[in-house]
Length: 257
Image 1: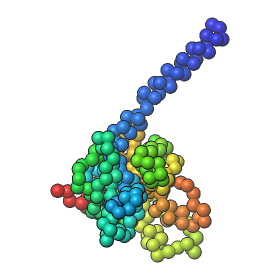
Image 2 (image 1 turned 30 degrees about the vertical axis):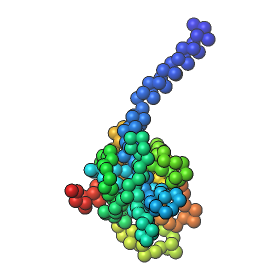
Image 3 (image 1 turned 45 degrees about the horizontal axis):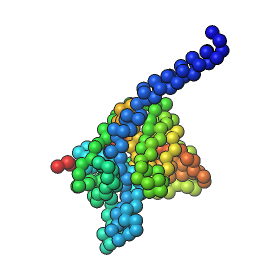
Image 4 (image 1 turned 45 degrees about the vertical axis):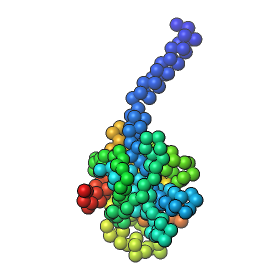
């Protein structure tokens, strides 16, 4: 067999192997299924330009009217005099929509919030078993990095669970200790450390299994970094996620109609 023919055979082999690998890749199918459940979280003010502002990401669970996000995404105050409200922005049947949302539950310890919309139910994501997550496991998250800058197009990042680690580091600069941090150190909990980079706006994005789409955590960068990397003068770009079992606990506090 001459060298040219051998090269052609090798190229065809690589081509078909690539096609087969792509066909076996579960993430594209999973992503197409779960994207309708992923929403932007922000505020809506009729007299403002723009009227809607993205602050983070969320995803629909349970009956499709409950939305999970991070507590720090929810603004402390709203301009009620001008009818500003918490809002959920979503895409359905080819249209961009916005729904006024009500805060129904909050867990500040794990930085979780649960919103309710009344307009219509959305496709939901299943909360998986965070206890079965292992270091080295593949994962993905989808959300709205950098808020409205990239438009109303959810972005997906893929990586692995780099470590399962306490949200508080054991050795910390005493000068950086605060009352809030001391309280957190008394009741630490494990978080997922990822090798994929999240950006502002990704807070509240679902972290899920690429094969099943089951939610195993929720992206949270700022809140955990504030405690885990508090002693650093230049915090790293590491991304963290809160395990989904805390989402289940919060959902159990809400009575559905």
